Length: 141
Image (tube, rainbow, N blue to C red; front, side, top):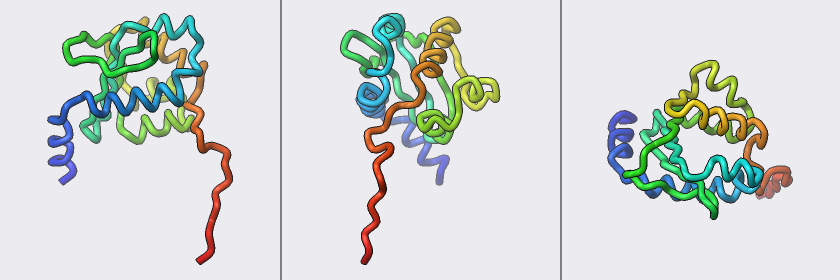
């Protein structure tokens, strides 16, 4: 069943998950990246592949932040990992060096650009979630 679902998801257009990812990162992560690094990261396509779910996101940074990249644009860097690995990275539970060293996240493409992105992830850290630090409210029934 899982394999069938993955095959169906792989056939879906890349644009919808790319748009969702771009919007989330624009809100939670991109504002924390300094302007000089934003300029260095701009203009190149990064493809995020979530292996176990069959989801691919293509993103490009520009003057207004991250946006979906069209299928015709060449990929400068491809990152591959499982959903759990991406989630742990977003939560700050694992650092990029550990993920790359342990081969839980694979980077393909422009090594220099990949190093810039990895160093940016290290410097900025995980996204600042808007609900982080808020107390959880439990209601008695």
